[in-house]
Amino acid sequence: MLTCNNFVFHSPTKIIFGAKTISQLKNEIPQKAKILMIYGSGSIKKNGVYDQVKEALKEHNVMEFSGITPNPRYETAIKAVEICKKENIDFLLAVGGGSVIDATKFISIASKYPGKDPWDIMPHKNNQLKNLFQPTEAIPIGTVLTIPATGSEMNTGYVITRESTKEKVGRIDQLVIPKFSILDPETSYSLPKRQIINGIVDSFVHVTEQYLTTFRNTKISDRFAEGVIDTLISEAPVVLKNPKDYSARANIMWASTMALNRLIGCGVDFDGATHSIGHEITAMNDSDHAKTLAAVIKGVLIYKKQQKMKKLVLMAERIYGKKEGTDEEKADFAISETIKFFNSIGMKTTLSSVGIKKENFQEIADRIEERTKTMGFGLGEHRDIYKDDVLKILELCD
Ligand code: NZQ
Ligand code: ZN
Image 1 (cartoon, rainbow, N blue to C red):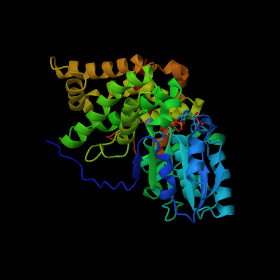
Image 2: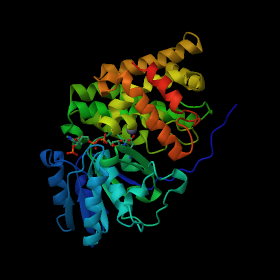
Image 3: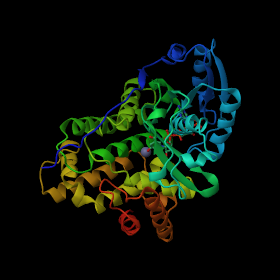
């Protein structure tokens, strides 16, 4: 039997969790720091988060940079890099969701980048993963999270889109992991339904891309993963019905952080194929990140059913309560119940819902070919998904 992979788990982000915790910001950032507060398109001004941050930092030296969009753009982030250099910024405070936090991570590295073109920090079509720049310096980051979804508040990843070349690419750096993240579930009360649903589906897929991989008898990671999925399934209808249910908001916020802070990934393989294909769809047409995942996941799970069989069976038995039937029937049940859950909370699971028709399949496959060349290996936990497999996966989606 296969056993767990060796792993290093190093997660130094201090989490400050709970209602009215934004006031604690003042204790987390050095008094002498020159801070750049980075945020999006203004939701924080409407829901009171901006005022809470400003009040907490009234004795600090704070500059602001706003206008980070969903699927954050290189072209916008680079403007903040200029400010950081000119003003000698020595602390970055991201206030928002995954897009704001990811942009802040890029800004943190790009502000100290010694090379000519900061786009070369990212792996892109002319920049292979194996030659990637390894940073030794970055501006420290803290975050105030306003949408449970990506886990960026407690991980090393960041995903950036370059408008001019229509590329959406990600990388990881231990240097950008936030020093602290403030998670006040009340900040999520103002989320529009679309973003509540996006966050739940994104978190769910983060779990399945770790949990639904090779069976390695990883009992602790598997039980943690099941706990996160179970929480998302039980709390989703509660928050959708009553947006101000603090308890459910708190459960979802912590579940979503736990989904991608790599704790549930200890010892298990990492898939990522649904995300990679989804990112190409977003690069093509700016679809919401989570919507692309919901459209693609079914195809990936069916295509890789044999390799994922034991874990799909585990999911069917433990999450969806199916104890009877063959392994094949249980695996099919796990896939169809997952799709049913997404639909039940209002998430569409078809390619057409993210603007993809049959005639677009080839472009997605060609993009994946470009990506696998950049990475030097295929997608999925076995690194064996290439262009032709992607075409077959897309055929299996609705
Ligand atoms: O622009 P603002 O005003 O911030 O409005 C945002 C945005 O329009 C709004 N919003 C956020 N909090 C709100 C709120 N509206 C009302 N009340 C609040 N409390 O929601 C919209 C979406 O925000 P965004 O930050 O884009 O959402 P999310 O957290 O889902 O981030 C998605 C981005 O993260 C990347 C995705 O690819 C995408 O670019 N990811 C990052 C990962 C990572 N760093 O580890 C992993 C993920 O798989 C993902 O790829
Ligand atoms: Zn995601």
